[in-house]
Image 1 (cartoon, rainbow, N blue to C red):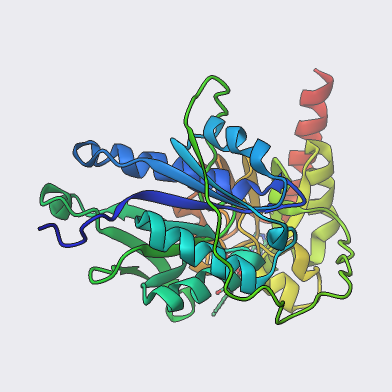
Image 2 (spheres, rainbow, N blue to C red):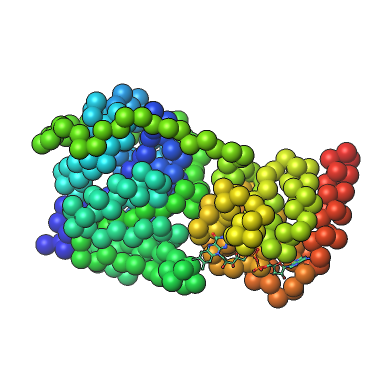
Length: 342
Ligand SMILES: Cc1cc2nc3c(=O)[nH]c(=O)nc-3n(C[C@H](O)[C@H](O)[C@H](O)COP(=O)(O)OP(=O)(O)OC[C@H]3O[C@@H](n4cnc5c(N)ncnc54)[C@H](O)[C@@H]3O)c2cc1C
């Protein structure tokens, strides 16, 4: 008998709020597609799990983003996020369908929900994963063991965690860590409606009012071009900002710049800041510490400006300028202006 009889497929929690699906669910579905493609012999599917109220019509979007099947739990108790009802419903879904692994976005909601469900199921969970693979040796024996990598010891090391003894293997992954595949509206898939059995419909927590966070400035996770300021550019942030503006991009910063009080935490990139993956990231006076790199290494093109030729940032950059940011940034700005005119 197989070690985990009946457990199959990679499930993804598709987070939605007011009917709007968060991109992270689609990013995880895209990554799950790559994982199942790496073990074709196991015939695994990618299954989306959608919880909410009046959200059935979103199931086809989830399929268009790469799911083979979507389990929809549509119930008035799931109208807004409730730890109690979401955890109850999701635990029942997992107990009924037996996913081999279960991926959730490391969002505020996902960080609340996934550990609670894992504890109820006595399943292993790896939080804040940055890379997920399947052990190909184990796969030969019919086991889809996830190798889940995440930063550890303050981001100075990366550890790969396995959960060989329990199912599902659970993991949370921050938004923007994985890329989202193109939508294919012609995809077809199965939609399964699941009705939870509520043992207790009295809410333990009553939300009296939701106060929307006032977001000041831009959301750097959505920017296509980012110009990052490090400690080496702290005293010329106006130059960094000017280059960002000429490129139609946004300014972001390393933690050093935030800690030194020159930038708001909202624009910090890195392990304790935001994860970004713009098409262009220009790192100005940033050393390339692993905690910073963890938040921007998936950028399509990285250009580094640093006066130290040995700076770590050059090891991940596609292109580099060795020199003083105060000399290079004005030249870069002029070149951009000239290129735009020409
Ligand atoms: C638990 C933990 C979490 C962390 N999380 C984050 C995080 O989320 N994000 C983050 O960024 N960091 C984070 N850090 C901090 C991280 O370790 C580094 O200290 C930080 O990224 C360094 O920022 P920096 O590169 O701007 O500054 P520095 O390391 O001081 O580097 C400045 C660079 O600028 C260059 N330079 C100086 N002057 C010039 C000049 N005139 N022209 C050109 N180059 C110049 C220098 O050669 C140097 O390479 C974290 C650390 C820990 C322990």
